[in-house]
Length: 181
Image (cartoon, rainbow, N blue to C red):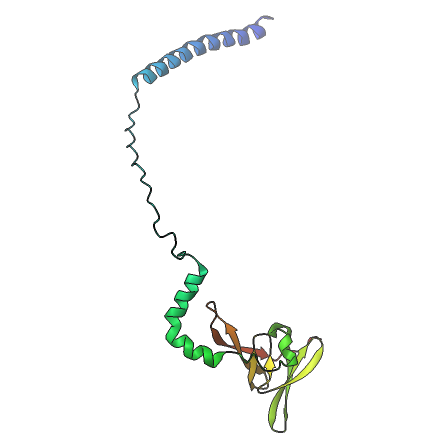
């Protein structure tokens, strides 16, 4: 009886070891046989085409990717329109700049409006200082000119350059700002 608890696990281990090695050998033999019979079928790769370099004959010509050539082409396409509109829209560079032209529009805030001698005026705050603006005054760094003043906003016309360098008009507004408490 004392040998029985030790004998059973020992006997089971020997039986399992004997079964395992023979089936593994059979499996390995079958895999080797299958491997020797299989041949992969890979189609051959086509021969590469021979490379024939071409010579660049127009070495003295203008680079087709230069910005100067692109700008010239855009000006040529817009030539009939650009000559008339550019002269009409160009900013007044010779006039004396007003004080509010040294500040960008996004630093300005409209804080009120009033009417003096029948003409509308707007109160603009810049850097904690108040300025009175009337029709025709200039604001901002883009040659903005005040065209309309209402109780709630100041409308202006800015003159800026587009990608080609032509002067174009662009509307802008300053709206009445609520007071922060």
